[in-house]
Amino acid sequence: MVHKPSENGTITPSKHGTEHGTEVQPHAENIDFTPQSDIEEIVRTGALQAAGLLIAQNVIASHFYQTPEKLPEDLLKQVESARANFSESRMLLNNLRYNSDSPIHVQWE
Image (cartoon, rainbow, N blue to C red; front, side, top):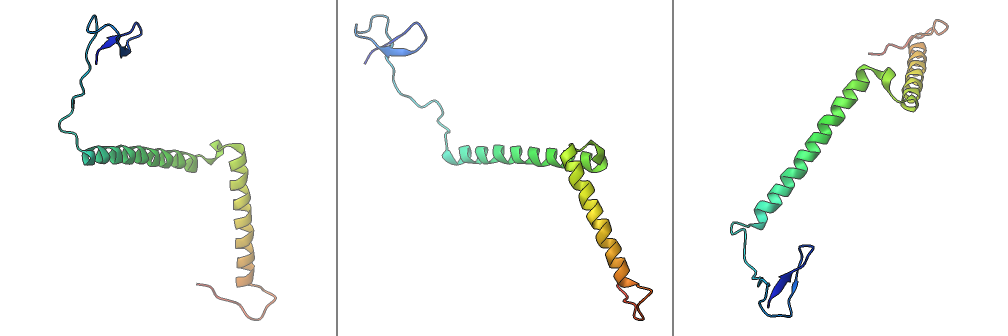
């Protein structure tokens, strides 16, 4: 079969024999092709991307942990609310440990 290159670079069949045409023959360009090596390369690339994302997440998390005032406003409100809840819980626990009105004092380790 004879194919003729078109103006846009694609190859289309020619109706005029071999005139200005090129015959296309399939051939193997990569003799060392092995599906296993390709799969290993894809897996490795995916692992590299995942490692990069994990590293970036940890760097960003560390930045916000060290400077919480730079958190987006909605997240900062959540942190402040959690701190307030924790402080209230801690205060209640301390009151349970020692209550001057009670003759029995609970000792916590």
